[in-house]
Length: 91
Image 1 (cartoon, rainbow, N blue to C red):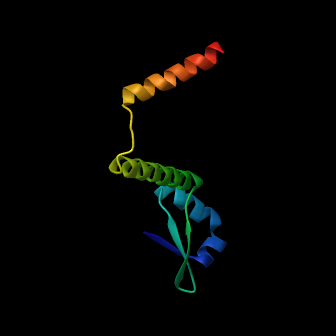
Image 2 (tube, rainbow, N blue to C red):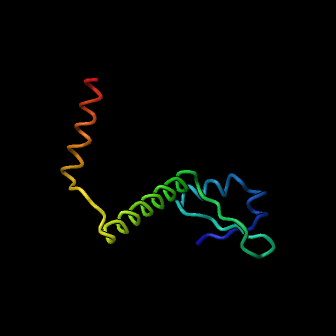
């Protein structure tokens, strides 16, 4: 875990920016000795958001499975997608 003060962020922005990319992890920023912010690269943020979105979708799918909602096989899903694409290309 990397911790830096808000003063360091203010006075050495480029250093913090480079450090975030180099270490590929968030940097915790303190203000008056207390935790205040977390700084991360856009790439890391977008990756984290994508992972959270995927986990949410998987959780919903698992809940639906547990509740016994109707499902289809992967092969059937692929066929439905292919049929839809083929239909759009023809029409």
